[in-house]
Amino acid sequence: MSLSMKNINLEWEGAGLPEAPTAPDSLKEAGLSLAFLTDLILRTLYTRGGMLGLDLARFLCLPFKVIEEALKFLKDEKALEVAGGDLIGRVSYRFNLTDLGRTRAQESMTMCAYVGPAPVPLEDYVEQTYRQAVTGISCSPEPLRAAFAHLVLKEELFNAIGPAIVSGKSAFIYGPPGNGKTSIARSIGDFMNNAGGEIYVPYAFLAENSIITVYDQAIHQAIDPEQGDRIEDNEATIRRLLNTGIVDPRWVRIRRPVVITGGELNLSQLDLRYNADSNFYQAPLHVKANGGVFLIDDFGRQLCSPKELLNRWILPLEDRHDYLTVSSGKKFEVPFEQLIIFSTNLDPRDLVDDAFLRRIRHKVEIEAPARDIYERIFNNMVKRLGMNQCPEAIDYLYKRYYGDDRSPRASDCRDLLEIVQSICRFRRQPVQLTRDLMIEASASFICEFK
Image (tube, rainbow, N blue to C red):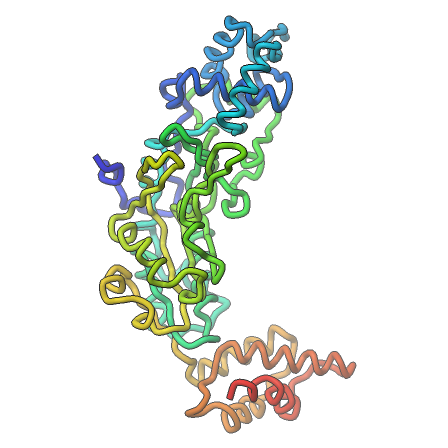
């Protein structure tokens, strides 16, 4: 059966914390074989040196009782030597590799050099990802307005954005350049990141006998930074290692991720990244974005053609799952559960055909601002830069530049006023806004684009 067809409730409501993965009580519950875990222990001790049982369990993010069987097996195989500890028990024993253990560790390193938290099984990753999907996330006008408070938006535009977020599907944000498409898309990401609740991602998962790393500190913002770094004091670790019913430490609690790409995006970034030296994989960008937002900015100007990119995603957008391929040629299924936003200056009809446009649920056009909106944006920027208001400067721009040949752009406000600021600073005069300074600033900026 397709993993995405499991009986999992995709309509998780609310911005709280989804059900957390529970720490395993045994190797079977951890989804790991004895052979896999013994190899991981050997590689860990080989690269890090002798370790206390407490530290080894903490590093592997597994309860000590789960790794205890593997440690006993390695001791019986004479791959480990054990030094007694204090009154805490076996968890305080120090484990060191023997000469035989080092040889076996070296052999294991040639097969796979991954050293880190034990991976979770693919099935657990799939189930948890669907449990915390963006589909049906709680979104109402009040918290959304807070995320957009720094922007000046028409009410009808704001009302178009909300349903796109609630759907958790996909959206096209398009229109002429310089009118806030990227700012709007990033604000959606900020809303999801700060008000969309928290989710869990694994350090890594195991699929087709291959390790795929997922947690990425550059993308995933851990709620408890110490968890992402796997740092905690010994007393807390002992409680975690010896107690039951706790959160599985192989998972990191994070804010909903926001992945932003631009013209640098290419098809290889949407496939598993294989580390030939270490023989394990890194998850592609859209897998790291599961549960959050994937923003493709400046769509249509990527290193690959829009057709190639959209053909890669046409089925995942429809079916909410994707297929990844390991070096052996075997494929496995993963969730495709993120809000994808395409932001472009180009007409979507020039980029994609009707079949693909049908799969993009929401199309939000960002038009050139009307004068009243432009004035609000302009005056907000004036205030931010500590300048005085000057209606004559706006009048001049509309009389001289804005008309049939050139529509006003929201970004003009920032660009022109920052030029005025630079002129004042260069002349060592107070930063102020006048009609004459606006004439000078616009002559060096807008004329090039008439």
